[in-house]
Amino acid sequence: MVSYNPYDPQMKDDPFPLYARLRAESPVHYVEEFDTWALSLFEDVWNAGQNSEVYRSPGPPLIQRRDPEVTLVGASMFGLNPPVHTEVRKALVRHYSPRGVAQLEAQIRETARASIAEALPKGRLDVISELGLRISVRVASLLIGLPLSDSELLSGIVRRIFTRVPGVEGQTPDGILAGAALGEYLYEAVCERRRRNGGEGDDAMGAFFRMQLDGRPLTDEEIGQHLNILVVGGTETLPKVFAGGILQLYRHPDQLADLVADPSLIKTAFTEIARYEMPTQFLTRMVAEDHELRGQKLRTGQGVMFLYRSANRDEREFPDPDRFDIHRRAERILSFGHGTHICLGQHAAKLEAKVMFEELLSAIPEYHIDESEVVPERSEFVAGYVSVPITFQPR
Image (tube, rainbow, N blue to C red; front, side, top):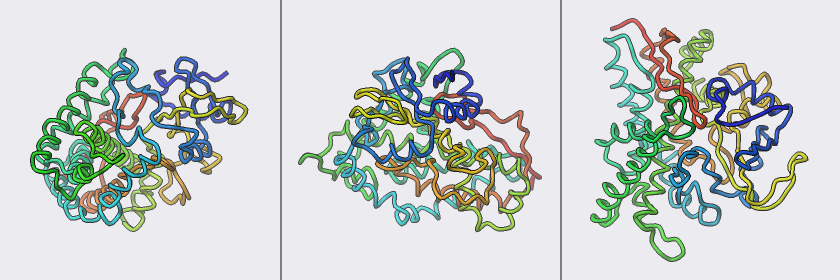
């Protein structure tokens, strides 16, 4: 019988063989330790994501296993359900829409070009720390309304939150402190400062200050919780996906050559990269009413895990799912979630990726990766890479 636990070392090193077994043998799998069900099939995760009546937020805080009182979700929009969740997203959608994020393209391109130009004479570039992370934290800051001068501070805090060490399950003590530091920064250094200035601003923070829920404005604590999830979500995942794409293209030189020769393929290529290099292992919900799924009885109050990385490799949805192919025309993927909590920042992420691939492959069409220098992320929650250095002919 297949056994699954998100903290098993195998899940941090190579989860895909076990995910395949779950899909084949136990697609609705009970994890007794957490009284939680793990959904591994694409169709089940897709359907559950849009059924907020049965699968409610927030779910059990598995990633805070060592200190369940500390949570990244808190009272943020990620922990809300319709109709309140709908109201909050509606207030932000203008800033995070394709038209809203398009206004940042010039700044994204300028940052990408400057970062690449800085690396050209050295012949070496870490595509996470020296490119992807620089851009993602700046875009998150611009959309939210945070000082760009704090970008390095914020990216460092977020990195600490997700850092894992051998022998410690879940967040490290330093990761917990980093989560508290981010909350303190957003509440004291930002919310109070903006409040003193009247809360005005054509950005996400300004939208929160103008927001009315149940006939009252949000408190500074509530605004800080909402901003927390926007900072973390906008900073951490895209650099991993982008770096994974650069690594996969190196491993598939024919596809790299196709992309260099025809940059119009980047949009389709990024869909495949996001499917293949999906960083989020799982997110959780809570069962709101008794029901049966694939012969299993899910009870009210139990947890549910959406195993996104498994769903994106489901052979029922994607032919030959473990094959990387930038020419694949996937009709749907789960890399940005689906339904009620579909990723608010998906359009920003797609624009950032488009610009970075355009600029990097234009400036450096040929590169080498010493895979012994690639540092993977070993986490039960977010997979991917911490460092992916590329080398090339200096100039």
